Length: 324
Ligand code: SF4
Image (cartoon, rainbow, N blue to C red):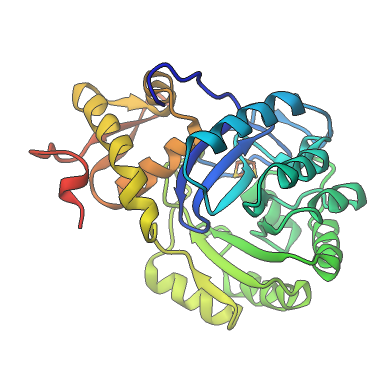
């Protein structure tokens, strides 16, 4: 945040995104307002598990912040509705997408858990350029284990709605599968998933695994070899999501990383500590911490049921000078 600049409540970034390049995030539901409570969620346990659509945050407030952010920062690759919970729960999503598209020529993306792609939600999403739904399971039992959904949700309905959505959507759909070791990675589940994804017919299948401190400490990652095996099962459209690419990491990660390292050099902190100390939105922060953890700069540990971060090595100089 620039000094003197008012802190945004709903807009974060631009952040380097592994899937979207440089992404300006739009957060339109309060923290952990979601229809799922995924065991791998990096935002912690869901505090409001709901399928109720309503105007959780005001359209006018969001658009005003977005307009200022677009003026203050270089053009992002995407304006992305994502954030602290499930964005399709905001009943004004469609209106917001339409207004954003009038405001800017930057493509609009929406990250969704796809739990409620019922007709009015589909109509909202059809206005976007890119939809990134997730599908982590195709059997009810596995779905319950990995996503811990709202009691009214059934995986067969979710799959049926995803098929309808993809059939009529004019934009691109990149389907994400988050893999958790020993939970949704059995050959049986993945073979079934391969057939169903073929019917859904997304443009891409993006494989991800637990890389950031998850909601449940026992949720663990697949190895690169295991991810390669999953990729083979899911077919030609599947790809394993890599690290940040291009300009994003070089331009934007450096200052943030320096600030985080400086703070953690003083004492280990939780994500909330870092977020409130540095004024960084939690979603933006998870990306930096995930990348720093992968790069061996920080590590996380559990203490008194909370996830803390600490500096792994104390470098002579932090930040840009150490990166290639
Ligand atoms: S990972 Fe996404 S869908 Fe799952 S609980 Fe967290 S916010 Fe909700």
